[in-house]
Amino acid sequence: MPHATHPPSPGLQALVLCGPGLSLNTFTSTPSTLPKCLLPIANRPMVWYPLDWCHRMGIYDITLVTPADAAPPLEAVLRSHPVLTSLSGPRPEVLAPKGLEMTSGTAELLRLGEVQRVIKGDFVVLSCDFVSEVDGSRVLQQWMGLNPSLAASSSSRRKGGLAVYYPTYGREGISSKKDETDFVATVPLPKPNVMLPMGIEEVVMVMPTDTLNDTLDENKQALPIRQTLLAKHGNVKIRTKHRDAHVYFLPLWVKEFVARNEKFDSISEDVLGWWAKAGWQAGLAAKLGMDEVLAGKRSTDDEGANAGSVDEEEEVDATALSSTKSAPVAVRQSPQAFATRVRTSTAPPPRPKLAVPPLLAYMQPASPTQPLIRRIDTAPQLASISLHIARLPPSDPSPLAHEHKIHPSASIGQQTRISQEDCLIAENVTIGIRCNIKESVVGPNCEIGSNVRLTKCVLMDGVVVGDGVQMVGCIAGKRARVEGTSTTGAKGSEVEVDGAAVKGKGKGKQKATSQSGGEEDDKTKLTECEIAPFFVVEAGTEAKGETMKAFDPEGEIGGDGEEDVGDEEDAE
Image 1: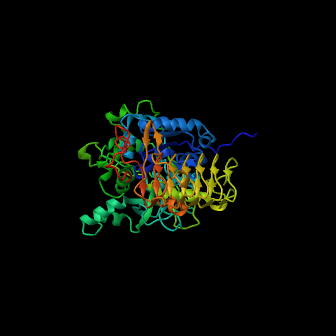
Image 2 (image 1 turned 45 degrees about the horizontal axis):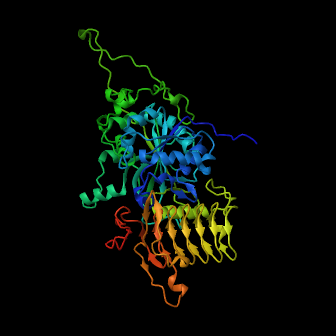
Image 3 (image 1 turned 180 degrees about the horizontal axis):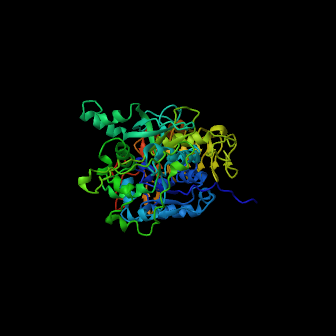
């Protein structure tokens, strides 16, 4: 068997931020059991997608930064899950720094001493919910190739950074008007001697849409723009329907820049926002301490955090090696001399103007033919991207396509119809007779009864669906149970979660069983519902747009084992 070949390493580190997943709290309410980074997207753990993207770029020095509660399950899955163990290269390191909380910002995370000691060179920061079909090596090569030419235009030998933005519109079945967006103002790059790569621009202003709306409210729906921005850049392009992908290619000096500015909370809003403004707003770079950072001066507070890291490499004039810009010719000038009566003193040299390294951005064009880039931080995005990947045939050139649409180990009953072109059926799945499954993703170890109808649904690991259940547009968490007609009489159904029983019927209406035993009256019908892990939906429940989860698992059951009468609705 031939050995796996790896692309050449670009010499970068990768920090994958595995956050708490507050916007997915229906499925991540217990991070010690199932953190956000392990939620399945098209039957793969979420963290697989940024890891695979880094490996396709040739980056294998990867650190997963996570809160302490989520570290044990993450390490266990990295050792045991076949999708993660099959990745080439060494296993990524898991770092759970002290002081990292569920509410910590991304810039605050970079200031932690343990994270500072890990960063030893240029690095890329990305979120665990990042999914991309884009070839990351092309973006990386553009960033590395443009730095010399930009250094020539700005008289700076320091590297700039690069962020990735994608359009939130133009993709049927994926784009939604409810998607978060960012305000991004960019200017074109200076024209070099060769053609510029498409989509790369320089950022001069960036902020989330929420911050933009607050600014507009404070200024009577007017956006204040400084005259210095228009004086320096006459061609500013503003976009309001792109979103920050939370992927940042950063040079080493940014580590100290973030450490010096303790008020920075977010990389997206604070680090990038102030960096972009410092490029054109007079005096701002000095206020942020950027002049000392670029000069290589370290503050005494940062020396301890940087202990053990390698020294910065000696600066090399990259313009002399550039093939896109010619280096400026040095001209000797004799020192200016005063009159003879002032003796032999010379005039002090003028203080050079600080040249801020540019902040670049890859602005993906809005086109259905463009490769997919998305962040999966909401339940609708998790469902839409999972169904998008399910539609990819095994022969598709996309790196996200599955080898098997229906796993060979799946057991399928007679007269069951599965739309193979838009479904994914994982391993060890059992499906009863006369089922109809369309545009759905069924996770491993699921049990589906007979006469079940699933349309545009996502079932995670170990979900049980009873006979006759009808589900449309639903997401069922790990080991959830949806009871059908065969379990109508089982009142007290419950499932154990870490020793505590959770049971309930959600907020949906439960029909009474007809005396004639009509099956149509007893069927469980769910539409666009979210079902929490380990939750039990009782037979006969009808619900639409509900979130079904235990409101208070500890107080739901009284001391005598009876259900609390006051908790008629146990899902929010």
